[in-house]
Length: 423
Image 1 (cartoon, helix red, strand yellow):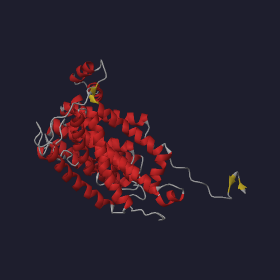
Image 2 (tube, helix red, strand yellow):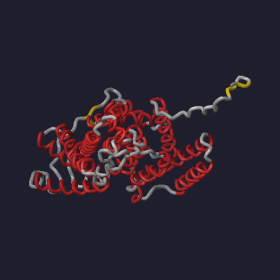
Image 3 (cartoon, rainbow, N blue to C red):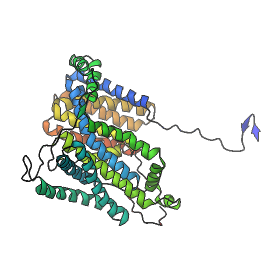
Image 4 (cartoon, helix red, strand yellow):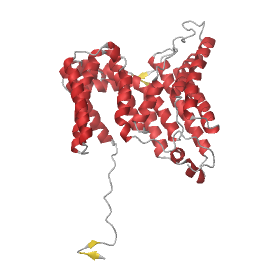
């Protein structure tokens, strides 16, 4: 039945809501906007190092192990297994990466050995959680403890008494080759040194990502789109994600849930091991006890910040790596300039919440935060050194607290699964 051309036989359907999709143009626009904010902060504060090629290169190197650990957590948790043991798997990767490099006189042999060492930790985690149904958190904590003690024992067994080695460190490792885009390094360096608004900042960013980049870094970057393709564009990835969402339904369709969880956790361990191998082979050129410094936990935070997606995970890793690079290079001066960037970002978020989302209360709270951060920036000239060393960890806490409202973990993540269950 219709009245004046309008159907009254069934209710009107609400227009479908449009989901935000991160495309390449949007990503590039976001990066460009961020560089503009950093350029404004550099001009205002005179902290030229916040967009220098050296800082960007250091940030990239510091982001790689965090990103690899986060990718490892992504694979595991998409299959429904919480992997708190990333730190222990990274520790195994640091030692095995150093041992492989020395044993076979090749850094690439160390890369393979580091992945195998991390996968060994992944196998233990899978055996405990998937096969025997042990609580995932308890199993992960146990791996962190075992990984630390096991590598200390191996160091005393293999490195103690060797030239340059000892109970706490290995001898120097073979150098990993680096790659550079030819003919643009010096022009970019010259343009960066002029400290022009925006142009010099883009030159610094480009120089940092195109000159003297480790081959291992390129491999790590390629693993991000490869993981996305494998998990979201293949039948294998669909089965892995089904095990993390509805393992009972997956089993009813013929999926071997145990097998796919095992494979995902092994891949998780191998990726975390690669992150550890990067620390010993590339970042330091030597294995040292305690080398990971909690990066496995920060990688887990990057994965949560990225909402269990590879792209967001990579962005979180770069953010944590950048803050770490700032406090290592210019300390209080650079971190103080970053306060201005944070104030501008919070102001932009407040405007977006008010105009586009109509969230008045949230916009007010964000605006107050922006005012407080800007006030701290105005009344101070630098940030105490004791605070700057805590910057990456504080960034981790702030990012997770701000992102907590939009997160959605896999539905069966962390729930022990036994064959025949209906979850």
